[in-house]
Each structure stands twice: as structure tokens, then as C-alpha cells.
Length: 110
Image 1 (cartoon, helix red, strand yellow):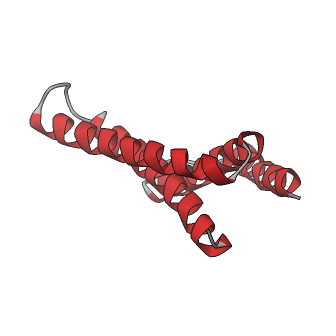
Image 2 (tube, one colour; image 1 turned 60 degrees about the vertical axis):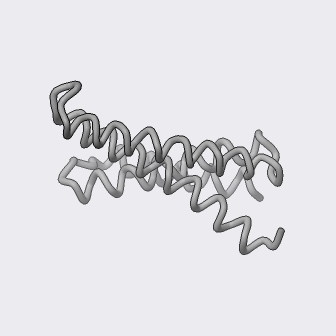
């Protein structure tokens, strides 16, 4: 598989996990078993299923000890940015942690 396609596969896995998290956050704003909760919870579950399918394919091409930490840090960065855009606070230490995460990705992949 071409490296461009592999990059898209990893990006898709990261984004689907982030989408699942955001949908779950949205579901948490509703009472359990109400129609809006069921909708957002169900969409979140579907996004998680898709992210697991993508991840199972990603693991064909990458070592687990490299791709898992890279994707985890990337998911944290994406979810933090989305949270910030949704009005959640991101302090200096949090931002510094993201910088360290980016450095960790570089070191793991170098």
C-alpha cells in the first residue's frame, strides 16, 4: 500500500476516534435513554466501530509499539483542538503537554 494511502488510513483512524469522543460528549448532555441521547450515543458507537475497523487495518502495516502511541497522542491533540473550539479551556500546562506529545511522536517515528 502506498505511503500516502497509509497516511490517510491513519488519519481516518485518528479522526474517527475523535468524532466518536465528540459525539459521546454531546450525548452526555442529555438524559440517558432519551431520543437525543440514543442518537448521539448510537452515532458515537458507530464511529468507534469504524475506528476499530480502520485500526485493525492500520496494524497490518505498522508496529504496535510505534503506531499506538502516535495515534493516541494525535487523538489527544485533535480532541483538545475540538474541545477548545467548543469553548473548553486549554491552559499553558495543557498546551505544553501537547507540545511534548508532538515531540514524543517525532522521537517515536525517528
